Image 1 (spheres, rainbow, N blue to C red):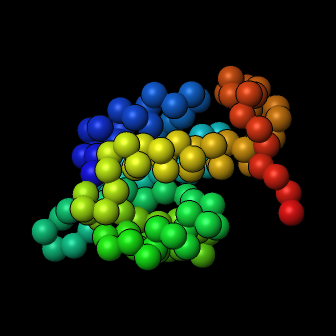
Image 2 (cartoon, rainbow, N blue to C red):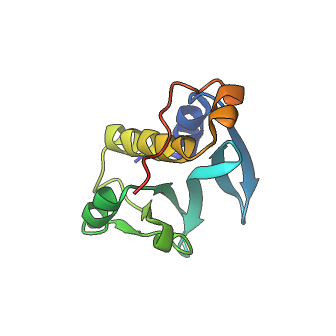
Length: 127
């Protein structure tokens, strides 16, 4: 699984993103002020975990994997937390982070997407 340095580098490369360190040293990534991915610590041995927003189908599929859990405090909004590199490759984690970015960016207003230079990302579908 991506370490924090690789996680931050990947998220930094996505257009219009910002980051902040909060919640006990968690690396929190946002688009338009809305969170799409988090790298934080868990457990007594302080292991890194990556959390991200998912679509309904991906959420149901991922929480069945060993090492992937409903994200604390965010599961109701279809977020998962990946705690081990045994379940998802770095490539898969990057793909899910990208999907999370697109889900959240798609919920922004057209004006906000234009201001961030991401107007090419489609708005979220209603319904």
